[in-house]
Amino acid sequence: MDDLTIKLAAIGAIGIGAQWIAWRTGWPAIALMLAGGILAGPVTGFIDPVEDFGNLYQPAVKLAVAIILFEGGLSLNFRELRHAGWGVFRLVTLGTLIAWGLGALALRYAADIAWEPAILFGGILVVTGPTVIGPMLRQLRIGNRPSDILKWEGIVNDPIGALLAVLTLAYVNTTEVSGGNAIADIGMHVGLASLFAIALGVGMAWFIAYLFPRGLVPEFLKVPVVFALVILGFVIADTVEHETGLLTVTAMGIALANMKLDSFGEMRRFKESVTILLISGVFVILSATLNLELIQRFELRFILFLILLLFVVRPLSVLIPLLFSSIPWPERIFMAWIAPRGVVCVAITGLFAIRLEELGFEDADALMPLAFAVVIITIIAHGFSAKWVAQKLGIDQGPGRSVLIVGATGWSIELAEALVKRDVPVTIADTSFLALRRARQKGVETFHGEALEAIHEDHLDVFSYQSVIAATDNDAYNALICAELGPEIGRDRVFQLGNEEEKGISTLPSALKGRMLMKSAAGLLELLARREQGWEFKQTRIGEKYTLDDLRARLSGNSELFAVVTPEKIVKFFTSAARPSINEGDFVIAYIPPGGDSADEDEKEALKERAREARESAKTDVAPGDGGLAPA
Image (cartoon, rainbow, N blue to C red; front, top):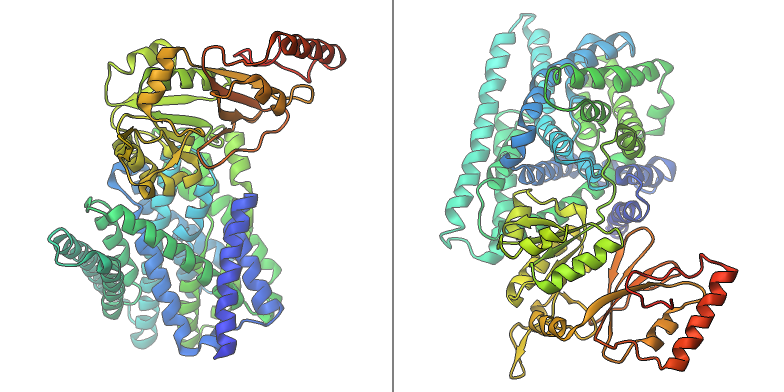
């Protein structure tokens, strides 16, 4: 028992460690988890999931996959189909049939696999899966349309691939037993079971939607109740027909995602965390099951199949369905290249390979090494090349470098102008069209509407912003913006103005405050008063000859350092609790009062002389900013 505890801890450490390394390096997380599982399993022999977990192995993996697909369904909102719906429909219908047929042909004639296993495995290979598409898309910015199409295809195709395998196995079983042709009966049976599974998932979603708003389930039990119903629905549908449980949990997730239940966003974030844990653990476990003997049996004929899968099957199964569509060709080509496989592909293959072996098909034992080969090759090929391909096709939008300011006031518009001078894109959002007029006159990009609603409705792409500043006159609304967007883009990247205080009583508890800008944590009324007094944003470049100490020496005691803009256009803000690091070449933006330059005339002349000497020796060492804080 102690040994198993250590192994469980190791699985968690490997999976989450791989996710963290992927975040730091930009490498595909799934590739790192795969490498960690292989090292812990077949290479060192430390983990042997089949032996370690015994009879719990397959049920645990199946339930984990069910929860992963349910959470994936929660991310599918019908509003995304406004610009991606027709493409999704084509890919999951005609595209799936093409991928199934071409995959089976490639398996039969390139890999020399018998027809029955080839058709079954070809059906499984139509899956791309949220376990790999999700992490990959998190590391890319390619626009909403291709991203949404790939996400919908990956999640919807998972249960479809399982059903195609079920159809094939049912046909093989019928043929082996009766020798007859019962395709119509099989199709009717599986079709009715699938309809039942979808209805069950939607029904459970409506059951939740009935219970929660009426207070029939307390807050602390909502997540456990959802989890219990997900598992219950999966087991019921799977009992009626194998693998239809995946349809149930996917339908349940999609239905819940579009019901707009109160507080469901918070519940979804919890499920996202659970899913990351499950993906990390399951993929490490499945990788650890890979047998070195099976790897040694990998034959050269399989290489031809993999080449066909990458360069023929996937491209044709995307490009043919999308012919005559309005989707631009660069996006079509990108989607035709991207099709990594993950947990679901390996898990389903392992289950059906066992059943084919029981029926006496000799080629069935080749499916598992082939499945792992497909996963490894597609993860390496697609995971490491996705960003490069997107850049070459011109659809890579690069990392988010814009700043979103919520609240159009004279102060926030001046801040936007200061950032724009440093080539940092800024968007100001406000519900007042009139308040945005001056920002438009200054050439600053604006958005008319409620910011949180716009982000939830995808009118604003939150991931295009490196920082969000809540600068309205409502402290509670500012804190709400920080609380809502913090989990999306990082809590260290959302800021708000300080609380306005009246008679020494803060209008908002400190526990609810976001990260407050500037050391003084001044509120909007204070900042507007400063603006009336003549305060303004000034900026200067820090170099070898003009250091931060020189800058501080020239500023009065009332002046405040506001932000740092790096040469890469990354903005780091000073807050009431943190000071960003400043390096040579960075621009420092300060907020200073009239006469904020406190150096006397002798000091000013000395600084000017140093600046002249610096320009003579190295003109690039000192580059005065637009605001004139650096010596002239």
